[in-house]
Length: 548
View 1 (cartoon, rainbow, N blue to C red):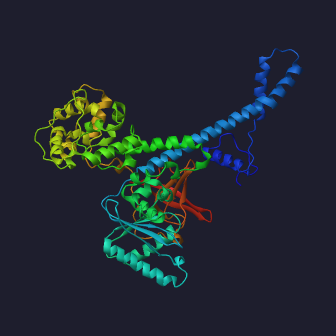
View 2 (view 1 turned 60 degrees about the vertical axis):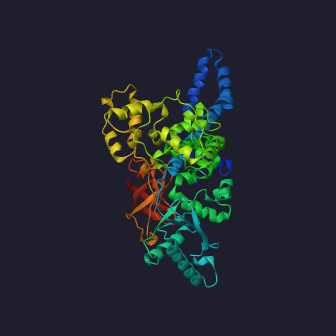
């Protein structure tokens, strides 16, 4: 409606152009590009300048005819297509950036979780997960009165006691609530239970983005992972695992189904899929994977690996035991020199986590040209022998094998032991090294990359630098919100015109781009905002600062 009988300058934003195109496609709007009189005059003068100054009247008629029938329509089409092309590129950029930050959400490890997929009539689907994401228990409970019409409050009270009993039995300390239908009502019910101290130990809850959970629940991977669970319960499991390891869980879903942008269905799907797939590969690759514990669906997303190669790595690991070093990956069927070169820097082999007897002597570095492919043995005795000879401690880092020789020279020059790679003392010493003081023969960029890789402790997660979920123990009351009220929230979506922030109310508030104080927000960031206005249209927010 805001575009009805409206004339605007020639520079609409990407979101404006996408909205106009959608309105026109649905035959709600009719959009026309008008060329200003001055522009028409300039075009005609250019045409006349090409012609010789004879028979002026005939030439003017010819130019007028050519402009009205051919030139002006061509200019209008090119302007329109150029604006649409820029709008599509901008929309794809927003999708890609939002997806990157969604995938790289900081994992929360070492906690037991009960996940709730909210619902009214069909109740809340429940999944209790161990610290490693294993399913311990599933159920359905009715925390909302509308779930049952007869004696609703008494049934609700019974199911509150059921939730309390589950906490006593499984000792979970975190409740993950999906942000779909009935989310706020379920949050209110859980917040009430926490405030009334119905749980035997401290419990907090977090709201989890459940986009794509329903798509995952019916795909082939979900059926293989959770064959004995119904689709609704699989969604609850997915919601809980998104807290423990968001990257691993989101990768199970085709990125275009995650809905982290606007006008998704108005963008060429091939273009969108190619870009989003590249973002997923980048996110997984830079996070790095332990080749001895990662799952096949994650391996498939590593640069240089395909579904067949990932399957072959898993098969080799199952048949011959854990990999002891990166060199052994070469012996896997389908891994050639090029694919090995691409993927190996993103795969880790944590020698210190394998059962072995450490030797005081450090392994000697051997260039790839001198090394032979070794077949992995299935017996523990032979595996122990191979481990002892071939452990390479740099395999635990992001240093590429091509740079091992230089890395070992740096370590030796600093008087450090290779077997101490990743320990606090080793990292502390490496962080003090001045790249300019090293005598190794390599480029400045290479030495900086090596020092950065060596200055990370073994348990460092690339995603630790990104925002973590917000945990709460009470609900924000809509009645208490007035202009000037300061709130904490999490960015739930980013567009060209601003960012939407989940502050715990029925609807997300909008921080318009003019209210961001010159800052750029990213999906998942924790922010402090102030309420600017509140009406039937929604809540307008002003950014105060970005929280760590």
